[in-house]
Amino acid sequence: MNFAAILCAALIVGGVGILIGFFLGISGEKFKVEVDEREEAILGVLPGNNCGGCGYAGCSGLAAAIVKGEAPVGQCPVGGAPVAAKVGGIMGVAAEEGERMVAFVKCAGTCEKANKDYEYTGTEDCGSMAFVPNGGPKSCNYGCLGYGSCVKACPFNAIHIEDGIAVVDKEACKACGKCVAVCPKQLIELVPYKAKHMVRCSAKEKGKDVMKACSAGCIACRICEKNCPSDAIHVVDNIAHIDQSKCTGCGICAEKCPKKIIL
Image (cartoon, rainbow, N blue to C red; front, top):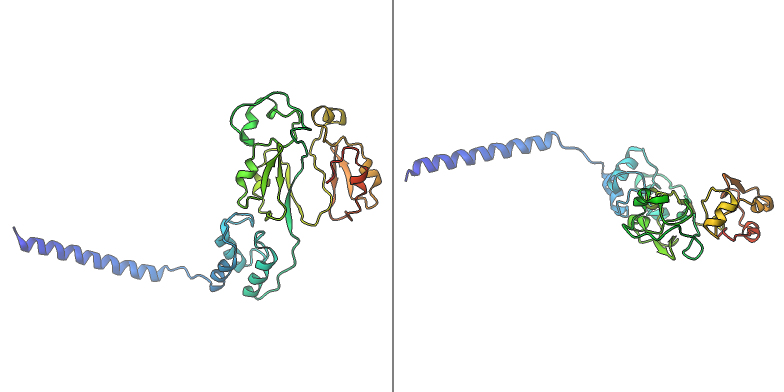
């Protein structure tokens, strides 16, 4: 056995390793990206859910955007006012008092109230309904399909299927918007937590057609519109809409609604 050859090979390999390590060390220092200490501090107070509800790719993306001045200190919907105050303290600015929002499902078509055109057996996913007859078994083409795509998308366990429709737990909801984005019927919207009245329907058909499909649908009778003293509710495209900025919560619209779909 040639020990001289083995020793020479070991020295060469060792020398190459040392050179590579030296080169990587110099390169690491030269090309090192400096991270603002405030960014790390902000990342430390953010919830860490990485839900994307802020509009950025996770909490680290939001922290970087806040430090750069591209996002307000209260951009995190999950952390709310407490986290906004902490982030504002790190950035040396006052956190504006933001209004808490929650998701709301614009449908009251439960199993008892919504009619069906046929019985469906297959993949239970709302997105898949675009490929089945009439967009799903329910007679109303605008109603909640009840297969829980929103439930699967919610990272906070704040939405569940109850009696065939999605229902939001206001206390658990963080307004991340995941359910809003995934709903193929666009039935879910973010509304103020303190909102007292919302219309639980999205059907845009004429009244007689709505009644054939669901006993809980808005029939566009305009009684709510005519009786609202604040001009906060109007019927557009055969469906009532409430302007929450004008609504005083008097409850007249809910009281007068013949279908009782104003929550």
